[in-house]
View (cartoon, rainbow, N blue to C red):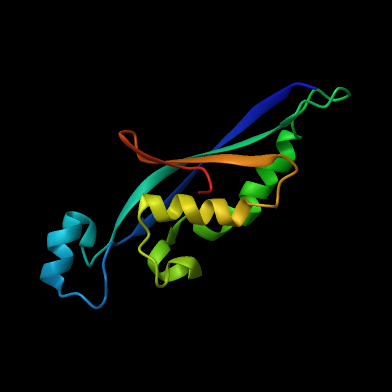
Amino acid sequence: MPIARLTRIVQFSASHRYFRPEWTAERNAEVFGDCANPNWHGHNYEVEVTVEGPVDPETGYVMDLKLLRDAVDVRVLQDVDHRNLNLDVPEFRDLNPTAENIAVVVWRKLEGALPGRLVKILLWETPRNCVEYRGE
């Protein structure tokens, strides 16, 4: 049976701030630059969720794209879209919402919830910056 990969691309908008509360404002600014702005800043993120599996001989699917879309909507987008990641998303209360950490959190929210095997999260923070996470 052939194995294929299926990718769903979704978008969300969110604000955040990089900072460590135990550091001074000067140290946060030195390490995180403009991203430490106490008045927050935001991005229009794009997330690529890739699953892998055998192509079903009856349907031709790796998995029903609607199931993938719904899982991403319910498990990820409802929690992060139009939110302040630091204040509104429990996973980031004590975790800096860097692109790297967002990709890991998205993985954890989806892992085991899909019929296919989750193989990659690619999170675009800007058109020029992205992070790839494969569950390692």
